[in-house]
Length: 234
Image 1 (cartoon, rainbow, N blue to C red):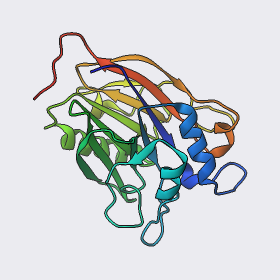
Image 2: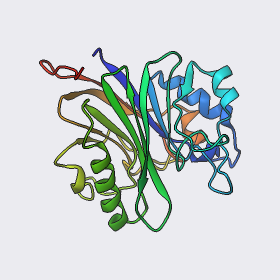
Image 3: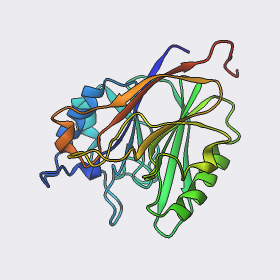
C-alpha cells in the first residue's frame, strides 16, 4: 500500500464563524487539504430527516470527491452526521454504520478503501463517561476487520493524556495539533488512531485563512503507510 493522506474535518453543518452557512466554502477548504480520503463530522443537520449540509451535486461539481454510500435515507450524506469522501473512482467496499450508546444520538461509520485499508469516522459525545462506552462500541465493531484500520474524527476529549484508554490496547493515538476553536486553537479534539501494521509518517492542522472562518474546527490530516513486512489479507 503506497502512502495515503487522510483528513478529518468537523464542518459544523457548514456554518462558519461569521454565522453564514456556506457549503462551497467548506468544499474549498477540503480541496485545500488535498487528501485521498476525508472523514467529516456534522455533515448533516440534526432535525427532521437530517438533510445534508453539503449537497451532493455541489460535491460532484466542485471537487474530485464522491461520498461513500453510508446514509440511511435519500437526503442525508452520512450517519449521525458522519460521512466519508473518497476520490472519484476509488475502490470502496463494505460500508458500515455503527450505532453508539449514550444520552444523545451518536454514530460512527467505516469503509474499506482499495481492498487494503479500513477507514472509520467517529464523533463522540460531550461527556467522558459516554465516550468510554462509545469507544468500546467502535472497538467491538472494528474487532473483526481483517485489514489494518485507521479511525479519525472528533473525539471531543480535551485532555492530552486521559480519556481514550478504551482504545489504547488496539490503536496508537495521534493528535496532529490543536484544532479547536478555529479562531483560537486550544485543544486537540480531532485525532487519529492507527491499528497495528500502520505507520504514522506525518500530520498536521490546516490553518489557512479560509479554514479559520469556515467552521469552528480546523481540519487535521495525516499521511500513513503500511509498515514494512505487513501484508494485506486477500
